[in-house]
Image 1 (cartoon, rainbow, N blue to C red):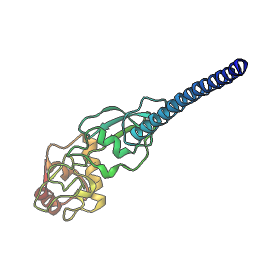
Image 2: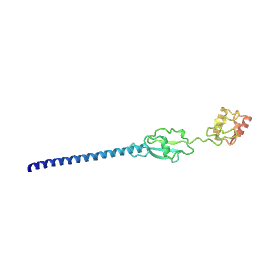
Image 3: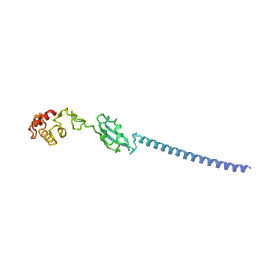
Image 4: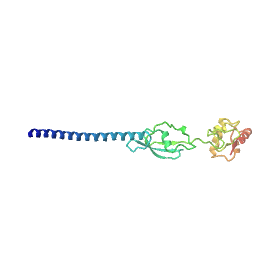
Length: 202
């Protein structure tokens, strides 16, 4: 019976060693699985941050763009890859009151190193409607120093050819000090001069 007891002890001992080895292996594999799961979660957070427009310092995860022109805070910004021009404008504080956002393709995808310049709305000379080059009304005088062919063409008795001659005459002289100087142009008679004096200002 003593020998049998020793055999049983040996069997039990072998079983115990096997259980310990299996337990150690299980713990080891469990730790690796936990680390793997943690890495996957971290990756998901990084992807979510990038998709939400958060600056990401990972290689290839962010762009550097220069936002200039009519924005509240011009400067160089880091922005998530895949962002649009509108995202860059928002990062720069949005547009100013003078901006013309319709002049840009706000839906265009950004590229690294790109400059986005927000243009200003066209502003015409005094007495000109919205920068269109045409007088706001017939009662508003046209500036002789800045008048365009289109503006001069609106004056009674002045056609596009004469309007072009007036602009060329003005530019050749480097400007005109008086409307009476236009009397030197051929094709401008007394009646036309009266119309010019009524609509132009030096």
